[in-house]
Image: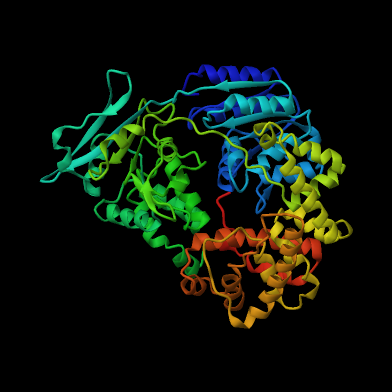
Length: 621
């Protein structure tokens, strides 16, 4: 090991070895994962199994690789991928573990500890309930190791965990393992030479920037000059953050065009061939591999969610193994994945958030700068912000007065969770457990609203005969997609594959895209809308304010792919990135297989086969 343990790491590991539940609160990159590694070592040596959960599949894949590299025979469960599921150490997404708990999966019998990485996701508005369900419903003999970013109400969170799980040790650190140096980058109007405006401490010992009288003449430096500055001062590897996919790509091209090939070409070619050699010409071109290789051979890359998963995985591998010096990325890179750099550059301190262009928040700044500084390698991490003289200089100082965010419950009661709870508990017990949610704890156990929603949704499920239909029950309990409900009321009317494809699409994650439906399929869509309207009437009658609304945006895309079997044509027709298509296609593949196993309808198997090709399913695992 290249670094000395910090006290918080020693305390956390000691508590794990004392068989306590442990809540670790510490900044990004501080070494929380090492605590988890010691927990894995401890429990496996005692012949007890371990489940390590993460919020996203990409992070699960990374942890799976990390534990394999440490010599552990590791399993992986992410929904779309199952590897060695009976292993003593299994890495998976939180939803997979939640489903195992509600189905009383026998594999839980031998579990000694569950690691909940990024447990602060409990506050996520869409998925946070899953973390609460695990903490509430996991067998009480299993210990929890919860790893969290810095949150303000840590003691409240601890007290809630103690109320459910018993003795729990809070271990915290507010210190970055690698100190952060924040500098503004600028040039003068008539001089392209780069200089930095450094942060210093004022007479109140608070960090601030010192602006001289010339700052009004400062301007943003040219990209080529910035990269040259980073190279000369040995500040790479560097991540340049932009808030636009298009700018990420264009800036990477711009940087590559003036950079010579690097010496490691043979190593890169060998790695490249190993991963991509089995692609045919069409697939090769779809992934834009000629241009990407041109960049990679010059130690430059770009990374955003629109790239195919296999390409993102390869870029992440190259960056982690020091084959990339300059990485252009959107902010999604800063969420979850462990890809630290010596320095990061924030191109502009403002972003378009889908509604308006605004200055980045302090928490966004903290998330981005969390990637600056590699523990055990760098003595200092550097964060550079391109100076903008249109912004009040006091705004820059506010970046240093960051307060931790408050962790608030996003607990909600879905139809799916009601079915799972009533399968596992009596109704009275289920209601008691709802009252043990973090939401209830934060609201001083004022749970009338939760109990009312539970009772109303339970009544709707009874009226829709869910307790008399194993197939309807399984569809919700195994997929957790309440938006299947309207389609389930009419699924017996299905005749053509388009009907079942539309049903499948109604359960996919909500799309950011809107695609019109061809008039040829409007009669099928109308059936779904009529069923949705009937469900909404039931919800209104039972005082459910949040209605069940289906979104079949992906139907037109996937139906075109079904007809043409030509991915390039489909991407061009709908102006889609291949990464967006593949990400949703993998979700559709996973869901269609589950639906086939529930209903034994051949059309679901046919749809699954459509998405089960090597380009969509390709991975470095």
